Length: 242
Image (tube, rainbow, N blue to C red; front, top):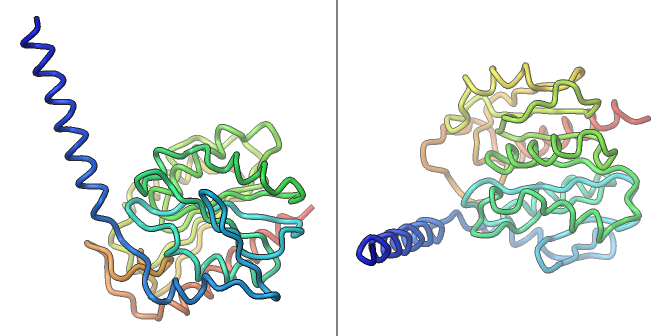
């Protein structure tokens, strides 16, 4: 029995060590992200313990954003800044080990920190989007959220009976996103959900962290992909305004 117990402890320790090595090799933010971390009177950037908030804290509408797997959260600074420039409070969350799986409820802290925001949306990129969808499903009936934004992502959670808004945006050159699962997830989306393909965009183009392994080559610039993404998000949220 003692030998078995020791073997289990050793196996568990090796598994943890292997995960930590795997998680330590993540996508770091690029210079383009650094440039967007500067706070200005016109567009303030606030550093929290586990988040970066872009925009006016008195904004009526906010978006909590979950990063993709193994992507440094600051890599989404350009996207968040562009969204904040449209009048939103955009908050990107830092995830434990850069995996949103370990921080599904991170939006709770953000919502509590900015109680003046009247309407909250939650969104995410890749795995972060799937975890944001799980959070949305968990809160579909409590009035905490107005909707969900998925970038290069799909939901595995059933939202079909909810009244939430739901928007999916992906790039035509995205070779990371599982298109079969994206198609299947349409049945899990609420009525009125919208899907938009950005022609020429890829998976990594939603962030500023360089090329991603297995991804397709974008035929448009990252700036153009971000602009089309923000246009889509802004237009959809406006269409859901009550």
